[in-house]
Image (cartoon, rainbow, N blue to C red; front, side):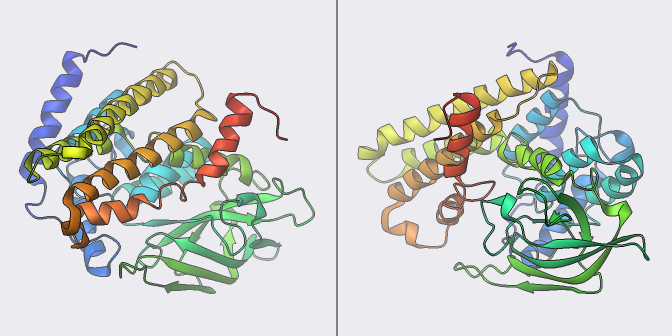
Length: 378
C-alpha cells in the first residue's frame, strides 16, 4: 500500500483540523446516553452538518463532500485528535447508511439519507430480542402481509436498543416466512418509532445512563416502501450492516491512535511513572499503530474493488480487545483514582461491552475459523 498522502489529501486534513480547532466544544458534553447529553450532542451533530463535516464521504446531494475513503480516514483521525464529541448518530450514518447505499432504492436514498445526515431522523438498531441476542437468525419478531393496506403488520420485541429511548426510527429484522429455514424468510424493515402500536420503554444501565430501551411492536403497519433490499432478503442485507458494524466504519483507527497517545501522556504524568505498567502502555500504543495499518490495508482492498467479507470479524476481534486492554491499563495507572467518575473509568466500563455488541467475540472467532482459516464446523 502507498502510505504517502497527496497534496489534495494534505489540504483536506488542514481544512478539517482548522475547522475542528475552531468549533469543537471547549468542555466535554454530557453523556450522549442521557436525555440532557443527547440533546447537547444533537446540537453538535447539526453544527457538523451545516459545515458539511457530518458525512464527508457521502455525495454532496445528501449533505456530504464526495470525499474519498482515504479522506474519510483523515477526517476521523483529526476528529479524534481534536477530542470531538462521540457521534450519537452513528447507528444511522455508520451502520444503516452504507446498507441504504448498497440496497436502497433511489427513492429510499433520497428520502432517508439527507434527514439522517442532518440529524432530523435518528436511528436505533433493532437486532437483539429476548432469546435472540448473538444468534440473529433466531429472530422471532414477525411481519405479516397486509394486502388491504399494501404493507406489513409487525409484532414482537426488540431489546438492548442503544439510545432507542431518544431515537425516531428503528431498523431491524422481522420474520416474514415462519416456515422457512433459520437464515431465510427474514426481511429488513425501517420502522418509525412514533407509529401506532409502537411502545418504547427506556431503562437505566448500571452507570445511570438512560439511553437503552426495549421496543414493543403490536401490529405496527409498515408500508412496502420501508422494506430495505427485498422481501425474504433480510439476512443478506443485515450481513452488510453487521459488516459495517464490525469493520472500519464504526471504529476508525483515529479513535485508538489518540486514546493510545493520551495513555502515554497519562503514564508520563502519573506519580512514580508507569512502573510495572510500562510494557502494557507500550503494547497498547503498538497495537493501535497495528490497527491503523490493518485498516489501511482494508481500505486499499475496498478502493481496488475487493470485498471485505469475513475479514470484518477479524477486525472486530482486534479493536474490541484493544479497547479493553488500553483502558484497563489506564485504570491500573490511576489506581484508586479510577474509582472516581472520569473519562478513563467510563471508557473502561464501555469497553467491556465491546466483545458483546456487533456480534459476540465467540461468534466472530467461529466465523474467522470457518471462513478465513477453512477449519471444519465440528
